[in-house]
Image 1 (cartoon, helix red, strand yellow):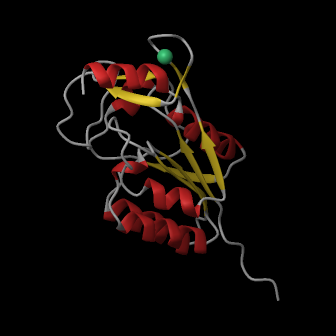
Image 2 (cartoon, helix red, strand yellow):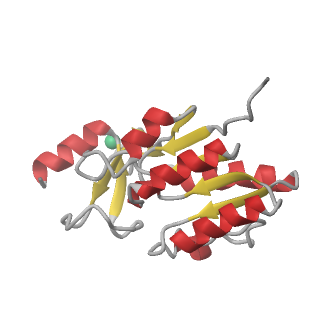
Length: 189
Ligand SMILES: [Zn+2]
């Protein structure tokens, strides 16, 4: 007997401005076009989705709360089968999130997570290392270094870092290559 299919976990990572969210949405939109039901979860403090993306998404995009997660699972059990779940800014979610990912995969749902693997101090960010270790596919994107134009792999905080949990844009962060990042950090540690 062949057991039910276990869902894949695709993790999309890379520095700020490397297009992680767009890549995540690309994965979900191509499945939604094939009439598959997909859900994109995002952090409740992240309001950028409405501002930076034009057309209305062809899938639901709730904030990640216990209610919305439970609702997605209830929908599944009522026959409205969800084929894929996306989670944006996965570095911000708490440990229970890893349990949800495992539950979805056991249900045969493919999970796509995008997030920063390391913060502006190059420290591990949230549960991303654990997600990466469980991934069936990993995409490591790069941005363009704002200082020299080479491939950027690091997120540099323009402002002094208060804590890790900051959702920001061009006013707070710059994408830098490792050479420029090291140079900037020596000048402004
Ligand atoms: Zn550079």
